[in-house]
Amino acid sequence: MSATSPPQLRKLSGNVHQLFVKDKPFLIRSAEIGNSSMSSARWMSTVWPKMVENNVNTLLGSVTWEMVEPREGEFDFAELDLVLAGAREHGLRLILLWFGAHKNGQGLYAPEWVKKNPSRFPRAEITQDGVTRTTHTFSVFSPSTYEADATAFARLISHLKDVDAEHQTVIMVQVQNEVGILKDTRDRCQLAQHTFDQPVPSSLLTVLREQWAGMNATFRNNFPHLSSETLRDGGGWAATFGSSDQTDELFMAYHYALSIEAVASKGKLEYDLPMFANAWLRNMDEEEGQDAAFSGGVRPGDYPSGGPVETVLDIWQLFAPSLAFLAPDIYLTDYTKTCQLYTHRDNALFIPEQRRDEYGAIRIWEAIGRFNAIATSPFGLDSHTPLLSPFTAHYALLRSVSPLILDARARGLPTYGLFFDRFEKGEKDPSPIRTLQIGSWNLKISRSYSPGHPSPGYGMIIQVKPDSFLGIGEGFQIVFTPTTEVKISGILAIEEKEVVDEETGELSTLRRFNGDEVRSGFTMPATKPDMGDFVIESFIPAHTRIALCTLYTV
Image 1 (cartoon, rainbow, N blue to C red):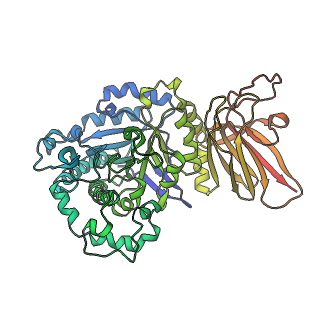
Image 2 (image 1 turned 90 degrees about the vertical axis):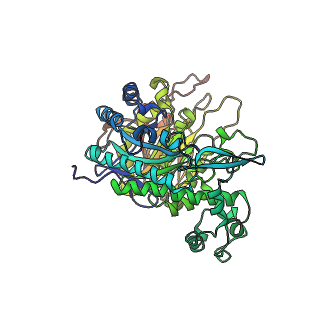
């Protein structure tokens, strides 16, 4: 047995969290693979090489209840063990996704003996157009379901401790996947309705009264008639909170959080791995009528009602304490806004699912550099040719600068991440200029100039010394002005750097830029700048995508 600690998520300074694997900081470069991929070690033998070529170091993949407990009390981890061996052979880590009783608002990954016994494992019921029907979703109001789920999950985690504690191939576990009720705001089965009519638990009301002012603004806005002074014990859910979709969502969130906590806590007793739950997001911006399968939907039930969306994030954080964090799956919602929302109450940002295209790839730098994300994971990268994937180049850069990012986090150095979207000629630039203050400098960040059409941009900045900034990425430029009045300020040097040791992050100077090449600012040029009709070749394409800018004032 290894003497090192299990993988741990540790709090550093500010809102910075860092995963440690074998007691060393580990920056995840992850991808989530298809739901069926890890059901077969033979299939995974075709996936591992592609992921290595993509510069991925961690895969998110599912382990299902039906796979490991095909008959009650009989557990089979043989296929999983082969998958673990394959990951180790290729130098990859894994984040397991437990598809137990709940997956995307349904229960399709439960084993046959669970599906065929509705009297023991009752389903949720929903009402549509005045008609109530039974769903494929297991009701969270039945202890028998989450107890059986928790038993299987605990056996899985215990097995991981037995076979993997020394290797630490598995570094985290997601508990269920995008839980909640679809096509209705709450479960209408008899047991759920009885619970809804009963007095609201005093434990919930006590917490709400004590922490009302610190609750997410979207939560408080859903109940504008309530405050810490007006919440009273003794009433049912509708009497206490009002009859509304938001009350139904709160009701479901509280009970989903309790049921997931029952599963996660039983697993953590076996092996204390970091665990989390993910969210199918609601549509925060669009109007009614959008396709909920893609936009998230506006009303609870369009998206899974009760899941850890931002409106009920506090409820999950308070009543599922075994979860290290709650994670948004970001596809079409506003990326920046979602990142901001999911750092609420010191939540560590982790994005287990996101777009795998250029739009998604350039945004990971904002998540990592601005919001200190511990990971971002494009979904379905295993079905994408590495040479065609934008993540191959982005993860290559992230791999080379990982020690620099880890060092910045450990030392509490200021960082900032950014992106500038691609747009076509004749269209309005969708990405605004960014202004911010770091230390004694004001920064104005815009796209890097080119005579032709602007290129996409992305990257991050690290203030390594009071007057020195490390730039990572391409397609942007920074104008620095001091925050206090001085006679003159300017750039002493801009040096293109290359990483000579990816273990330590040691840098050496490759070139020193000046004159036309810097355009009177700190320029991180595009890899392929558009020269248009300009005939003077004074625009240097990006090479390493790493540079150090040193400033001065007199």
